[in-house]
Length: 189
Length: 143
Image 1 (cartoon, one colour):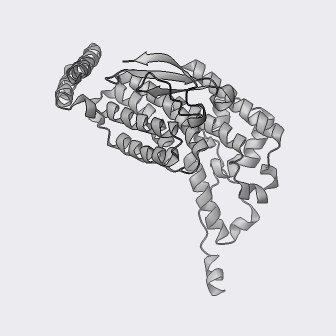
Image 2: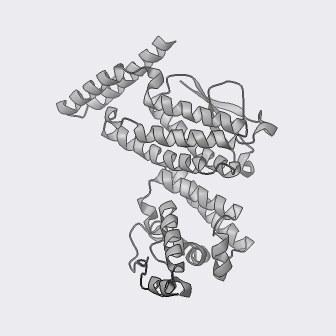
Image 3: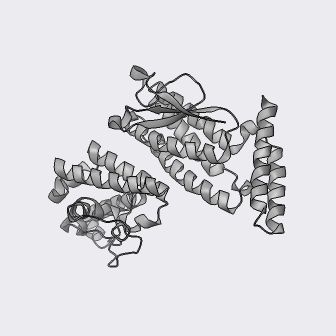
């Protein structure tokens, strides 16, 4: 399993590098090459987006269990992971896209971190954070199967999505009382 | 007493910019008059570059307390610089505006205690939420 994920990660990076080399000069190509080499030494499970995704999943599970404190802790961890993200592996357009998503994520994570005791407010930010996480995984590949789930009831029937590592529905928005509400909308690989 | 008098000479800088920036929300989105009036009376004091200072702001330490609120408020959301946020963040801000109005966490209850104009009726809350929703939808479509 590890090997497959590793291979996907590497091919992903190579593909990105190929796409970009079309309209970039040699210097950028060299940069992409060297960045591909540096990432190749990192295990895919510690690869940065995957790390952020795993903190997100911890947070999601905290909300499934109505655990505001664990959600807040995950919020702090997420802010830290986003700050520590090594952006040197990204090219200019990727960096711009990443920063756009990460800025919003950081703000939402900070609110979740700072609002232990107010799980309703934390969940509002988790709704927004989930959209960001989806976009981030979508643009960079998670390296594992991730389910995109949808609950039509949350937020006065406006609905909300979340990402999950399990096929089984465990709703983070409605908590323990209605934790099986929702359905799988999409699978990300 | 001497300390209190001495304190009056240390006035915090004022949050008062006379110009309307190109990034001002009114320059990028259509704001109907009833929405604008709510924003002005209930939000802009802490969420824009233009505070309409109350009389007590000249008395310390109230002025400092106010200044710290304005600083925090602008960090969280600044309507004067709304256009500088990415569309993703604009969407999040609009979502938070809806939620905080709905939940009654904004305008801050102590602020509304003193500023009568900032107490929102059910109808006023409704028009703000609908307006924010409409802009959010237009942002979603633009993607």
